[in-house]
Amino acid sequence: MINIYEVNETNKMIEEQNLDVRTITLGISLLDCASDDLSRLCDNIYNKITTVAKDLVSVGRDIELEFGIPIVNKRISVTPISLVGASAAHSSDDFVKIALTLNDAAKTVGVNFLGGYSALVSKGMTSADRYLIESIPDALAKTALICSSVNVGSTRCGIDMDAVRLMGRIIKETSEKSDMGCAKLVVFCNAPDDNPFMAGAFCGVTEGDAVINVGVSGPGVVKRAVEKTKGESFEVLCETIKKTAFKVTRVGQLVAREASNRLNIPFGIVDLSLAPTPAVGDSVADILCAMGLEQAGAPGTTAALALLNDQVKKGGVMASSYVGGLSGAFIPVSEDRGMIEAASTGALTLEKLEAMTCVCSVGLDMIAIPGDTSAATISGIIADEMAIGMINSKTTAVRLCPAKGRKVGDTVEYGGLFGESPVMAVNQFSCEEFINRKGRIPSPIHSFRN
Image (tube, rainbow, N blue to C red):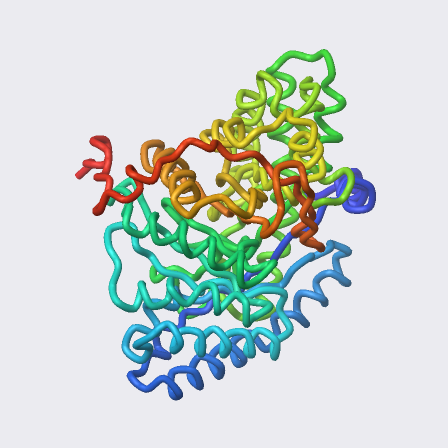
């Protein structure tokens, strides 16, 4: 039973503490669009998306107005395109044509982004996978709404180091062809099938024809709650975060159920990640400071983030029977005002961020690095992050943005939810000989669980 106090409390969270539903993401399977004719394939993709998603944006707006809950983004994720285009696309140019079709479909239905321009290559690459990956720089330069991801490793399969080496080059080329391209490109280990957040969302082959996944967010709400625990024990701190996460997730559950019912599409999961924005008061770093750190990156940061991530999950799983996606705390540098400040003052380094990714939801996210960083160094950073995910059986990711013509200390403006970022220093010692070894890093011993 919901009482008037809970209603008023939720209203205050929305009005004063930046509580919102970050995204309703409609997953659409494109497996039935497959054809060996490229034109027919593109027509099938466009027709499927514009038919299934025709009411997504209007339904999202109706829910916003009716319940007074801001829904920041309405998005689409599709089956990894390397699978869908395997029979019809025989070059990187063919895959770019598919990307343009996806972009046209996304524009027609009015969504913010469409994810799934993706390849899953944790153990090896098909020719279609390689063509899609090679097409990414052009595809992201020529489209505004398409997001791309490549899964290069998993706990079960190990890490495909050939793909890691290739992605270092692709990220460099993407940064040279488009100022915003790298902000829409993620490299994953253990990528989930049901992630609603961009840029890494795709509709996994384990999903049905269509599914509604919702991502909630409430760093400001959690920060306000944590501020009230100043001087209290860790038990009080943990209980406070857990109870707050429960309330935030219930809002997401409500929106997900409503969207599912109105669109007549099955409800998949609620992703209860704390996703920050550049807005003041909407920062994960500020939560860590409210716990007692002078600045994110100070000694104790990894422990504080581990506590936060765990309590968010414990509270969230009690609020919804279907929690999935990434679920925890995001630490994207450019999208979090507190992280931006910490990186600018030197409190937060790339190495500290890497340590933090051992205990949070994703990985090295939205980090600007010098434009002259070599492809091998980028591959080395990817390899380190993939190893953390593989060994710890968790999702990790890398979204690096080489800033063309910029050096350490410069600032890069991305705009909107992407925010801005100081260009962070990268270790200058070479890893090229290591990266140029061919093959893959095998799966860890604890992956053998049959």
